[in-house]
Amino acid sequence: MQQYIDRFGAERIWAATVVVVFGGLALLAALFPQQVYVEFIWEYFWGPVVADANGWNCVAWAGGEVQSCDVAGSGAGPTASPGYTVTSYAGYIPTLLLLLTGFIFVIDRLDIERYRAGFWGLFPFMLFGGALRAVEDANVKVAEATGDAALSLPWQALLISPFTYVVVAVIALVSLVIAVWLERTGVIPGYEYGLAGIGTSLLAVTLVILWQWAAIGGVGFFPLITVTTLVVASTLTALVWFTIQRFAPELNEGTRYMGVLIIWAHAIDGVANVIGLDWAQAFGLPWDLTPKHPVNAAVQRYTGQLLPESITGVIGDVWPFLLLKVAAAVFIIWVFNEEVFEESPRFTIMLMLTVVAVGLGPGTRDMLRATFGV
Image 1 (cartoon, rainbow, N blue to C red):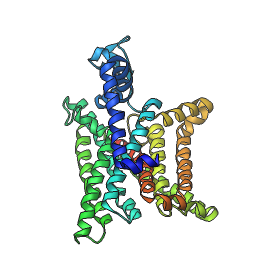
Image 2 (cartoon, one colour; image 1 turned 180 degrees about the horizontal axis):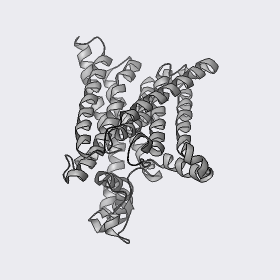
Image 3 (tube, rainbow, N blue to C red; image 1 turned 60 degrees about the horizontal axis):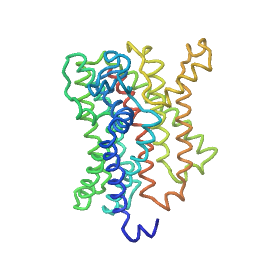
Image 4 (cartoon, helix red, strand yellow; image 1 turned 120 degrees about the vertical axis):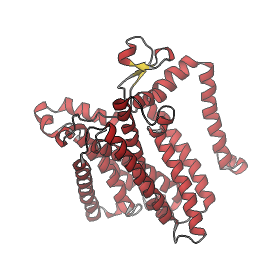
């Protein structure tokens, strides 16, 4: 492989890979529309987005008319539900790695040296991504309440996972270029300050939009959900972090204090899921949330099957998901040891940012959509 990289260049090989993969998929979809587009692309990738955008639990292909399963009835072809499946994960993960590789080429050309500073500067963008996703939830509720939404497909898809990750990543990359330029022209002392400032501003604007739309289509405002999520997740993070520092400090040699953010991000996701899926009504919401991912759906299902109702009725059936998230976070900071950072600092930081984003993004979204009643 190295000989091809030396001969053609890594960037050209990456570009050729993108063209071959997605061009080949488009060609196959054109040649075999039913098998490739309808039964693969639509059923596992676009259909769930359509269902989510319309607030449907299930969408049917219905000969291309695309209807709610309740309307289409049986025999309407492939169906899809909001959220992810094992098949969609198998498609999204390689796509994500391709995207990360492309971003690394851009960062390479920017000639950035202080990568850890960039990690902290990008933190507000992870919160921004979750808030942006909650705005789409509010958009659906506005449509249900008024019959007219501010955004509709295909533009609405930009706010729905996984497309929203790409949108936020592109915005963050553009912001990074601007911040580096501001630093090198002497406007700011470090690019991380400009980066954090842009991300925080975007987050603030997004929260204002969420507030306004939730006032139209939401069922109320429940700030105690956010307070409880932040307090419980932060307390749990502190306990886990100090336990690691006391009994296994070698785990933190690579990530250092970035490990705190990794644990906290996934604790937020875990706590938000526990509250949203098991205790939302206890906080005043008229309904509990439903799981959007196969992992937390499986945890809820198997916990309910393994434990008697007398126990799950008291403590709920989603709490193992929180333990699983925290354990996964600890494993991740152990994997990202000092040697990994020394061998490939750019790619390692990008992977760490992705790890935080896939925890804090969904966690922030679940916390905010419950808080704003959308």
